[in-house]
Image 1 (cartoon, rainbow, N blue to C red):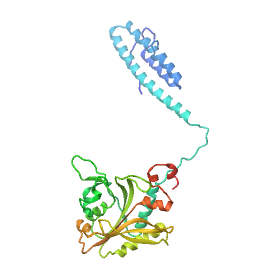
Image 2 (image 1 turned 180 degrees about the horizontal axis):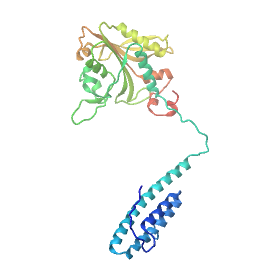
Image 3 (image 1 turned 45 degrees about the vertical axis):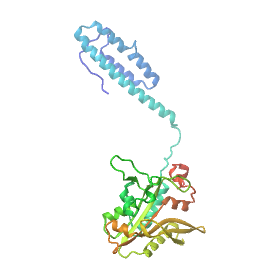
Image 4 (image 1 turned 90 degrees about the horizontal axis):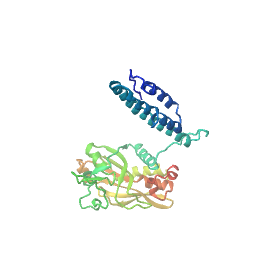
Length: 340
């Protein structure tokens, strides 16, 4: 930073002017390249017996007008030198710390490259499979309205899912209907509300539920939702689409089983399992879009039909990669993450 450059200040008792002291101090400070030398500089120039102190003591020999000018210049110089000294000390400490922490004789090494999280990898693989079947990938808000998370999906006010022990509600001064979405299904309602058929979308995203964690359950997890709405869509379209998905993800000869299940926003509802090492393992839930859900979005349920499905990419990754604990995905343990 610039130092004062006042002109016309006369030499005083010490025989040294402010300009001369300034030049000497800056030159000496620039050559001080260690903490020890910097301390010696401080004592020599700024200490009780230092040159600046001696200069200030000599102001008494000047007349009043010269004393005012010289005193102001000397005090300004003190402030500037103190700031410069602090900067040089910080620079010196940083340099010494760097030299002490790095062995410059070691050979150079390329820094390790990061990679995609295993959940992200699986989400991309799942969405790519549906993209190739004509589905578009979209995303939605994680902080959702009760209207879209429940009401428009045929989940009434007395449904257990609305209980505070299942849903994480967001406290707000002006609203009591804001929550962290419990599933990606709200995007069914949002998509139909904003678009006319035909619709074919997959919706990946994070979901939240207030529940205990264990090897197969997490309070936050990813989900991939799917929705297709058009004229003439049947249950056969649902089965064919999901069967093709299973073959793409788990291999071309994978066996698939559908069983009846219940979800408020589909009718009929099913779960789909795959044959995995001789056992049937459920991987997703699905069904035909409930007529009330179509009507809530403004669709004519006598004209349009559709199907929907939802799955957890972490659970699918657990099968594919023989992972026994879902908590590994969110523990940030590099020993786990670097295996993918």
